[in-house]
Image (cartoon, rainbow, N blue to C red; front, side, top):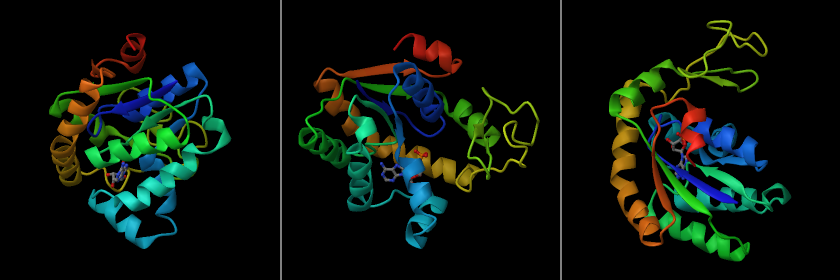
Length: 203
Ligand code: AMP
């Protein structure tokens, strides 16, 4: 059970991947999250994340391969945020071969640009326990985390300017990836403007 979730920023990849991974009992692997953790010890990664730029393939490929090799991925995983360009799709194929695995389905989530902006500008994260809140899942305690009570913050790359850059980057790089998976017959495109549970009901 290997699901690859594709979609531009704020199409809800994170939330939907998390719910799908719980439903199937397999881990949710987010390359953005792997990189946010790595950025705490690496100034170059931190700078790129803040600017909304892609991290170089050699760095992300190595970090991802290490993660996918772990025992908890043996029965499958939901991959979110990777591949972001054709070279990464090919690198993922090579990783799958090495690990004797095969992608089950590639899901592309789509929303309008207006919905993407509303979601990003409404998204908040807890700096203490890492829980995130958004339009679909607001905190019951307003500006404070409903798990641990810490004041919520906006992710440093959740700005209007960075979002425009990230949407452009996604559109530029995604077309060849989508063509590649479509030709292999494993691509499914889903309208992600509805509540996550509704979206996942049709996967
Ligand atoms: P995300 O949480 O998926 O929106 O990713 C946040 C940021 O992490 C992106 O804007 C990129 O800077 C970086 N990133 C995540 N996944 C990748 C990837 N597959 N390749 C390169 N950079 C990535």
